Amino acid sequence: MSLVSDFNGLHYAGREKFSVRFSISGHGLIEFETAEQGRLAVALQSSRLELIGDPNTTLQISWSTPIGRYALLCKEPEIFDKLLSLNLPQPAREHVTALQTKQRRNLTGEKHRVPVYLGLIAAFFVGGYFTLHYSAPLIADLIPYEWEQKIGAFAFENYQMGKKTVTDKTATDAVNAIVKRIDQFDGADIEYRVAVVDADMINAFAFPGGYVVVTTGLIENADNPEQVAGVLAHELTHVLQRHSMRKLVRQAGMGVLIGIVFGDLSALSQLIELSSQLDSLSFDRSQERSADDGAIEIMTAAGLSPQNLAAFFEKIQKADALTGNIPELFQTHPLTDERIKRVSSAAEPAQPFTFDMDWQQVKHGVQ
Image (cartoon, rainbow, N blue to C red):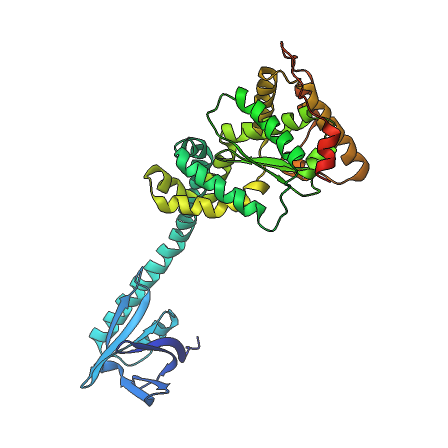
């Protein structure tokens, strides 16, 4: 068996360390070259050999001179074969043999420990995922309403940056009247703030804290104000049931969850920073179903027929089938036949109500 003559190592000179390539001569001289000191030769017999690191698999060769202490570290197991090929005194040979045996045992143990480490790491992340997934709704409900308002206000202002806001009084009064009607029957004590944004996309959403956005695209594509009311009742239900906050908490991660529990204000800062993504958050099927149920309940209480929401769903679905362009609203709120059927089968309100406004005039105001 041919022995390896050269090894890779780290040379420590005080606090400085350098990667070196060193050799061990047959006379027991360790030789290597450094940029600072040139070629060095250290006698093995004047050095101390020991295993260091975790789990004690790195050979450290250390020595002292009048000007300081030095060390050479090597992880290559073959170095022991080289050392044992030398004509070492019996005590030194026994010491090297004991170090080699210990290194081999530790390396074998390390091989067995790696799968265990990987398993523990995997278990940590899987456990963290499920903890985050199932605890997010509970943690989101612990968020103070003052936090929710700050998060929503930031998202509301951030969304409007660079966008034109509609100021036509006919249009803004109409949307405010729709939101006011919903507010009377949503069972929540929230003061809503509404913005009509000039955008072709068919979209509407409500941010935490009662901040509502309606696009001109939604108004232009709705047949009547009752359809817009249905969409907004659905969006407001997401906020009232804290679906947006739950999504935000899950997205923020475990650190923010812990911060919320202990009232750490830095968690609020992180949630505010993430809130700029609220308008693009997608909801799962159960949340969409729950928001549909909430919209039906609000509309029925307000005297608005849920058929208006169903009719709007059908209209958008047909337009999507013809153009292949999914409206912005339903990219984050997937529309299914099951949703349309459930809304269509809802009971009519006992005391019907319709908005007293010229919808064509409202549409004209956003063009």
